[in-house]
Length: 335
Image (cartoon, rainbow, N blue to C red; front, side):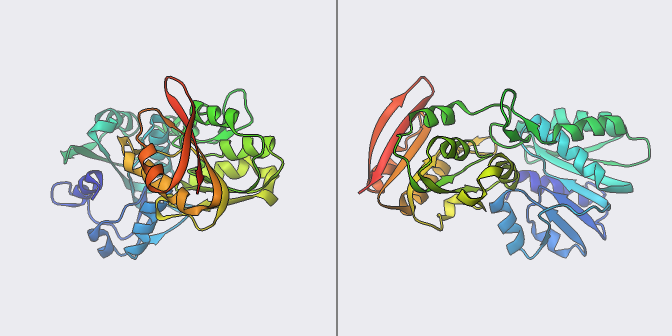
């Protein structure tokens, strides 16, 4: 179980002395056995695997947070500064007068620093440290700094990447710039790209958007991502390609539902702030399983990642096309 979640629940123990509420909202919701006992709990979770776990626990989840106020709002915030502060603001927006805002984070993601940030906006704050994490909470006494919360809220708004028409949002992959690895892949794709394609781990849609612009023989691209916020941005970035695109909130590690002529991929290899090479390997396995016979995989990855052995085990023939000091391009084909 997530140590930050375990630590968050301490706020509602004798140690934290926050009463378990009649109604509560949980942003970044993750299932915990004790939450099943709460009478009225609403969860919001943008990441598909965690949303599935929440649903399996029998807890209520909303894809979009309703325009309501709650006496307690809990948050397990994201991993980037702007995303964390904007989620504090989101929690504040949904907090009823006199309510309690509760946040928990690992120390390795700057829990102490962000506790100080929240304290600037709320004044008094209570903190508990355990499990190499920190939970901190504050009660709205009518004196909170609403100007600061408004500034934080603006950090989470949709924005354009400078010099482009691409829309992104804080907290999703490569929200500040076009990822150099994805750019390298697009520049080396063969001119005969056609048919039905998939883009697993599509993010805000750069690979799919550029491929559709450059290769008119592409019939369709299915975009798959586990982050609902990234997919919402992708829908905006490919709004003119409605007949040639499909958007799927999906955990790619569980497999892909279709069969494809080609797959474009810049697979993730981080789970939060932790490197997880197995995540990228699972993406490759799903991709290999979904290629038709003779189908092609176009992959960009950091040079040090050991993906070639996965391609061998999935019976794909492959070639390393090019590399630079950071990335390598591998093109593969299903036998």
